Length: 196
Image (cartoon, rainbow, N blue to C red; front, side, top):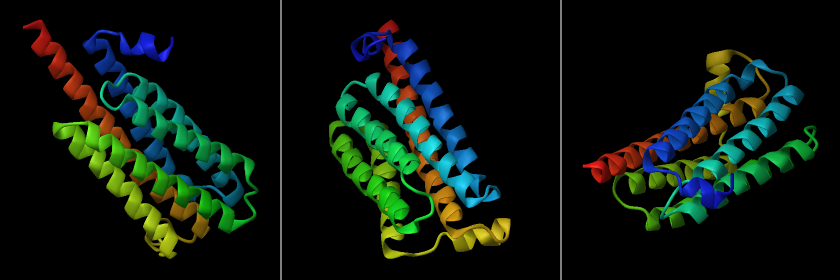
């Protein structure tokens, strides 16, 4: 199916697909929260795979959107690109990996802010929340503040890199998943209003 075919689906079908995408991304976030249980190399591979999966899901969900289709698909493309870069970059070097995730969060937050200007109502609120979450997480990584401290408290000693990325991904994915669930709810409401 092409993007134009997906966007031509009836509102109810679009709502179901966007809702399913939201649930899948929330599940990816839950999986990301468990990354501290893996060693560093396996964790790095899983982080890349999670970013790739979330990016593809976000691109597909974005293709179903109306007002924000292009920025939503671009945000998914940025996530996919970050996943590819993560997978292709050596996991032995901490700085390039941090740079990839930080850049992903900051660039994605800018794209989402543009998307929020095109949306309205509760969707605008959730897009803004998603952009703000990614921006704050990016600034936290840029400033070098360790999210790993919380993870070490919860899971015990774990590599700081994996622990930090686990929670960064989990939070970003959770907010993105809830954003997609809100969009699905709005699509269902639109379908109900059209049917009456």
